[in-house]
Length: 134
Image 1 (cartoon, rainbow, N blue to C red):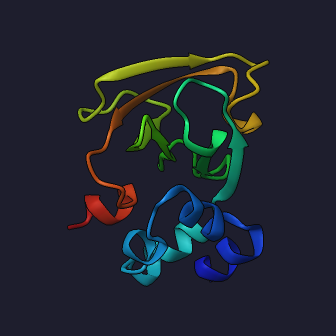
Image 2 (tube, rainbow, N blue to C red):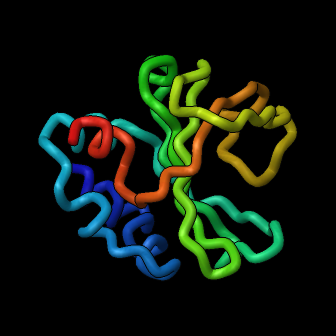
């Protein structure tokens, strides 16, 4: 379900080209976690900020109906270091950063633009739902 979606959309290959191990990140999800992530919009978005490897970021964005309950996540390498941001529409205890992404932003998925996000940098590349259930 998720694996097929990631392969068909080219996201699996894009993650591997960045240096991520797809199976290590997404291979151990529960069936419910996999179902939720399969409902996300997965996108490879060009980002020209300094040090971004291959000039793109991988985004996993929940549908509008799920956006209040589930985070948007992004994976990228910057200056040869892996980064995984977990972003919410409402402040969470785990969040230590805040960002407003303007409506006309070109380096993020359109559906997340025009609002404030609360986030943290996860020290792991594991998806939030998988880590939050461990």
